[in-house]
Length: 115
Image (cartoon, rainbow, N blue to C red; front, side, top):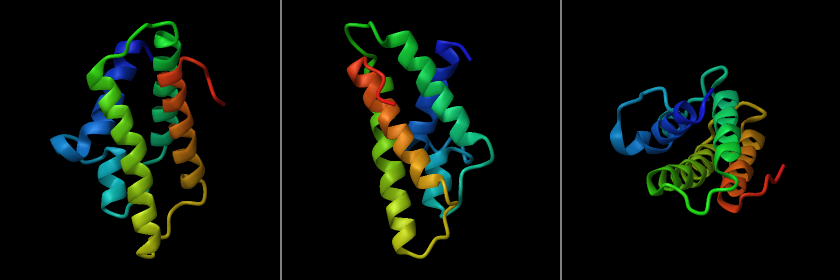
């Protein structure tokens, strides 16, 4: 995966609740109380690593990307928590994957990989 593909993929995932263009985006699925599709979390984490590597020395970040990453991180956790409180039976590793997303986004913002 190259930087442009990773960036576009993450923007699509992070803005899906607003744009309604991708019914299979992570946030849309979580909002419906559905788990991610197989391989989706791996693709998101890979895209985050690619973006990190491309931007770790960058003096500034693209506002559209930053907004999408922020929304992806905060909304995925909010939707997970809301679903959990409503009795959704989430996959066992979903919470840990969402924490990995959060760490990767922090890494992109800081320029230092955090785990």
